[in-house]
Length: 91
Image (tube, rainbow, N blue to C red):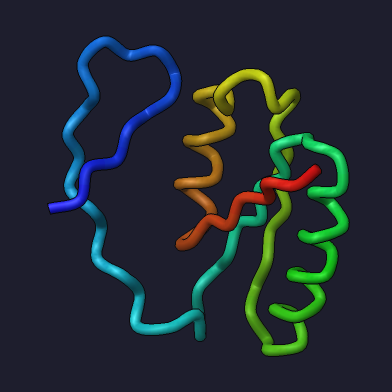
């Protein structure tokens, strides 16, 4: 069993089952989430180019600030519109 801790200050970590992995990205929509750290957009630009060259649908999103968790409405929007999320963590 893998334990994943949430660094948001919860006193009791929520237990969540992992979702099954997709067999591949063909036909999937990939969310690229920029957490607003410096140069994260540079990484995501290259990744978007690479995925696009492979014919994979990409949608871009950005958190207002890296110092807080993503707003609930942003998380729900991504979950509704995409199958996979890649987050940019850069400096």
